[in-house]
Amino acid sequence: MSYSKPKFKEKYGNFINGKFVAPVDGEYFDNTSPVDNSLIAKYPRSKQADVENAVAAANAAKEAWGNTSAATRAALLNKVADIIEANLEEFALVETCDNGKPIRETLNADVPLSVDHWRYFAAVIRAEEGSATELDENTLSMNIKEPLGVVAQIIPWNFPLLMLSWKLPPALAAGNCVVLKPAEQTPSSATLLMEKIAEVFPPGVVNVIHGFGPEAGKPLASSSEVDKVAFTGETTTGQLIMQYASKNLNPVTMELGGKSPNIFFNSVMDEDDAFLDKAIEGAVLFAFNQGEVCTCPSRLLVQEDIYDKFMERVIARTKAIVQSSPYDTACMVGAQASNDQFEKILSYIKIGKEEGAKVLTGGEACKLDGEFANGFYVQPTILEGHNKMRVFQEEIFGPVVCVTKFKDEAEALEIANDTLYGLGAGVWTRDAHQLYQIPRAIKAGRVWVNCYHAYPAHAPFGGYKKSGFGRENHLMMMNYYRQTKNMLISYDKNKLGFF
Amino acid sequence: MKPERVAITEKAAALVKQLQEKHGELIFHQSGGCCDGSAPMIFEKGDMYLDDSDVFLGQIAGVDYYMNKDQFEYWKHTHLTVDITEGRGSSFSLEIPLGFRFIIQSRLLSDEENAVLNNSSADE
Image (cartoon, one colour):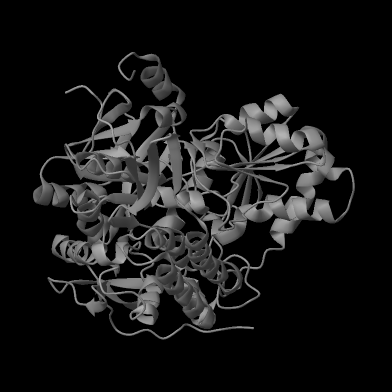
């Protein structure tokens, strides 16, 4: 089944204080589709003044919103989930057009998962409680969770609606008002969502501003009128945002890069069964979302005694990937999100070849016909080499996996942990001991065991090492968006006796 | 002539000049991983806190070029040429509003370059 490019207006506004408004200085930028490099629409090129308006609206709304009941907040979050679900196909099409990912993924992953994240946090705040402890017979310690106030959120372009749905629901559920800045490559689904939910929240509770990092992102991250900054993106920007936040003594959450190992022990080939089939797919998941995932399993580690036979099947499965119009449900790997991303990936493949890596499959741009000839497509690529190569150490953020072999558990762990990052990892084995011991020894925040690329709302996600800190998803995320108010109550009628 | 670690194309140098006129003194910092990572980012001098965890690679178009020390360990055998391409990142790099993006073209250092650059004490 094939869809076609969705319709857009000529231009869109920022969503501030419950209304769409034009940027203060009237400047817009052109947003294009990586599918065919065609114009989508104009979006506001916001500056400091727009950021200040959005932050002011959020501050004006925070007291009332922070005092709404959990039941009310949950009902509104559920309403958003229902609205996204009722318009699933429209959201999926807009996302595919703006980001380049296949419609198959947006229909079945990005949009349904987004719906679930809203519902999850709606449920969480109905079930959780504060705590109270009787410290002694006359003293009660009560812990009340209070919202921080106004949260700034800066999200990336690889899962525009899903990253929004990771960030907004917990912040809102905790009683905060939010100013969110989507990446300028992918402003469309956030805008569509604001159109659909414009009436759901009181004005000022959710604000979305568009624009460029240095002009809009920086004033937002450095604003002294926000109480927290949450960022998903790359390390240098993360470091800058932490610096800005440190001036305001603001807490930050950082979800940064990765170079995740995906480790296959020899027992996966003990049988030629459904599990082996799943494992082969697990190795090919490097191409999921065009490799534009922070947790892309971009380092493939295969035990040497199964290496040849295993790789033969991985290569065959990779070659069977269909690249076509991302609007076609048969398409498995779509367009890279932008031209500069496309160029960067090809430059890395070139570096890999120069360093002596062997191209097992792919290795080139992918040329599509007709209108898609202008889009940014790269062939799923497998490079064989060793872990000291740059392509094994740097995040390529494309459909490129680097494969190497290991002798035993010790060597697998040595290679797996020899990286600056620690976001994700995969472990595949039929050995019950390895199932537990290997994941425990890997320095990463999420280890998938006999699976990969699952992101349920109910499981915490975040990085070790240079992949950041703080966690997303799961109810523990609520505490990244709240203060603890401790009330220490004395029921003793007698004085201390000091004065 | 002493070999260098980093160079810049004429097109990229012209863009740097344009940014210098607007923002004053600048620095380049080579970013690490994720969405907009592995790219040279240009900031106003003083905007980013630099210390001995950053390695100075050289100066191009009047702008000092730095990289994090951990990352340099993997990059030290590579020669970098800063170039531009059309496109947009979502980082805080100053060229982004202009519709261009700095990118890196790299090649491995030759044996002679390696001998000079990676055996001398100057780069430590």
